[in-house]
Image (cartoon, rainbow, N blue to C red; front, side):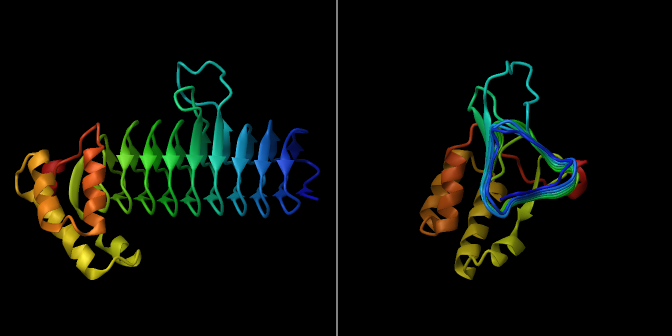
Length: 265
């Protein structure tokens, strides 16, 4: 049987695995399903419909599944689907979907630090890190192993490719291709080489991504010409193929690389 503190409030329709722990003064409201070994700490608030896989930890003051911050939301029954082994630290907020897609989705093994936020209808992949105060506007799609630094912000409807890195107190209003680093406002500064190496990418593939990056950002080509050249010269590498596919799917466009750091201020 789940271990529920006497002061916690758990709705009768909630479905908790036997190894779930719910701390003092936590609230589990509505149809919330929690898998084995989930922990809800003191004062956390979970709203259903919400589905949570095994091994998630929700810390004090986190709020998962509250209404979306959207003026057109009209009390539709929408959801959050959460995978396995995520950490939601103090003050994290993740809002459920709107009638646009009906749900917000969080993958596996993500780390949401203090006061980070995921807006309605977002899709977050696996092994991402959102540092303190990082936030996603609604309808964003985030690939695997993305790092959003402290107080970084992503505009609604943006896509962030795998292993992309957004620096502290920075923001993007356009899509970020896989492996790209950005700082300040809409300013591409290079590649996330450390992240790529840690992810186990072979040296030859990293070098190919470097060549593709130079073609895309340093040669002054139009997007169609850059994509054609990337495909012709290094398109046989999986990382480059991933970049090309991402870029062909962009609707918001991507940011440029500025030669001098102070130009972005």
